[in-house]
Image (cartoon, rainbow, N blue to C red; front, side):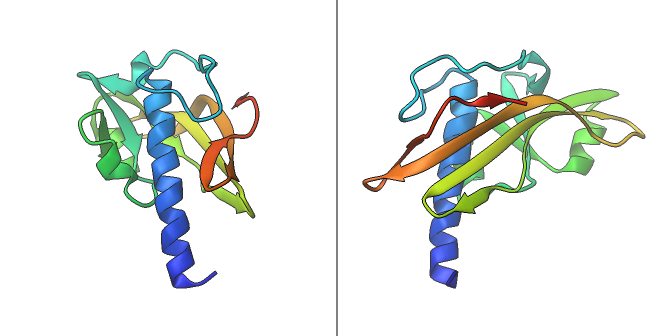
Length: 141
């Protein structure tokens, strides 16, 4: 993959990551999927009306697209927010041809302990005529 193609796909992934977070918060629907998302309670990841999102694996302009609704934090910072803090974390995106798979997890940080996963979603997007849409039903993790 050339450097130009990698930058282009990173921008696509970043846009899809931002769209996924917004959809989870009920702010928009994802293209090709108009059903409510089967997600666990997100109240633990929202602090003062802003969702906490770990900077791990964010691509492109996802952080800029989430301004105002998300606070982008490092793993270390999440551990310092309180005795216990939760956030959203993306796994490494998977790109296979015209399919991008995003795993978004709810993670819990407790001081002095490693992060634990409290659930999440796997969403696959497929490119169709230059537009990225949800390929099939999101999978609850």
